[in-house]
View 1: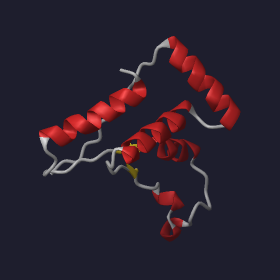
View 2: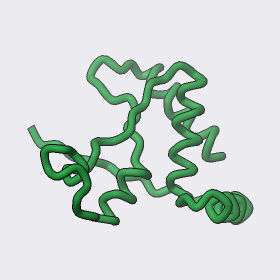
View 3: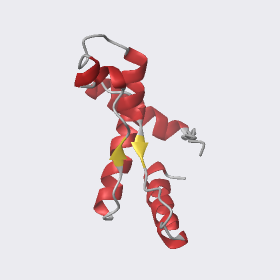
View 4: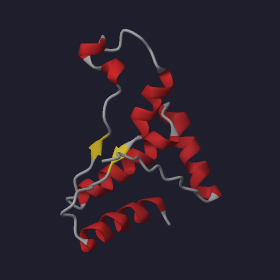
Length: 107
């Protein structure tokens, strides 16, 4: 079975993007991290589980526990969010997850 990952690109209106840039500057975090946290919190508030994507191998203790720095992998790790995805997920549950994400993103 082939394992594929789909990445979504979200286009924000200029007012939202400006607000996110200001928050990013204040908190020293990327816009993607801020959006990911907001989505995670909104899902949690609706009792929908989400997860932080797999930790990059170089950060695992077996591979040195972060002795080397791979900044791109670490940045992507901080931005990714795993949404519910399994074969028993009903259409109604899928629509509920999408509705929460869309509400947070304003789309």
